[in-house]
Amino acid sequence: MPAPNTPSKTSQVITRELHAWIAAERAQGHGHDTILQAMLYAGWEHQVAAEALTSTPPPPLPVPWPELASSHMRLDGGDRLVELTTVMREPDIIVFENLLSAGECEALIEAARPRLHRSLTVSVETGGEEVHKDRTSEGMFFTRGENALTQRIEARIARLLEWPIENGEGLQVLRYRPGTEYKPHYDYFDPAEPGTPAILERGGQRVATLIMYLQEPESGGATVFPDVRLQVVPKRGHAVFFNYSQPHRCSQSLHGGMPVLAGEKWIATKWLRESVFT
Ligand code: PD2
Ligand code: ZN
Image (tube, rainbow, N blue to C red; front, side, top):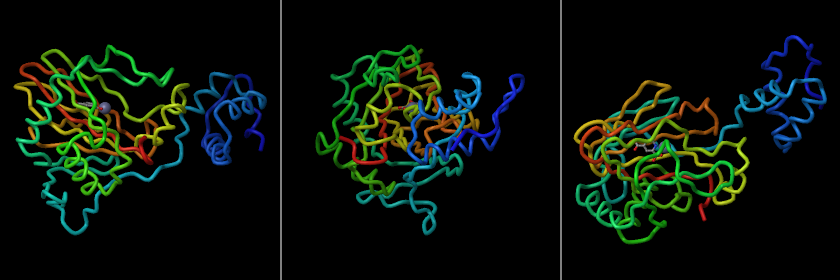
């Protein structure tokens, strides 16, 4: 189908009709470049066409979200009952209490400590990993099911969030010292970036994040959600969970780790994928 209306040279407005057309083209399996070319051919300016493409949200994916109807206060994690303190919808955010015991937090920290390195982020250009100025923590990854402790925690998370264990990345442990932070970002992989297709080969998109607090700092280090002006204060054993059905800013899943002011903050992050993570 040709791109809607032949725009005038002076005013090119991104309309709902244009968003709907882009969504329909994507649904037919046309990629970013094909759709862009069709728009340029129809007379859209490059900058407007590119903006229209990035501002059109992709279709929603299924996401983890626990069944809350029968028991609002507690969820069954299999080997542990986990309490809920805060539930928000759209964006979907839950704060869990006592997801991990103090002993589990300590054991994760001690197993991770000798393996810490300056944290890397996934490069959106190449799909590889790189040091990034917005992320000043130190971290390491366990492989999925690496030891009895990570297996137990992974099974608990899978049960709690009703999402297959195989769709989870290995646990990542991070240490933030005073002055370190993780600036606001999205955890999904931006579909417009060239490195994304390679990343998606290993289990599809990220659709949810669980940040577990292993050690609270003396001051600072809250996890923030700027779109909804929410701050979650780190407490040992507690966790914040959020999902994002669209890899797009409309998910309102922008979040960051505020600078730690005193003491050390330790977390373990579990990212959940659309399908089996290999
Ligand atoms: O440590 C945090 O609060 C934090 C903030 C944002 C962690 C992550 N993102 C993450 O691990 O993705
Ligand atoms: Zn994050």
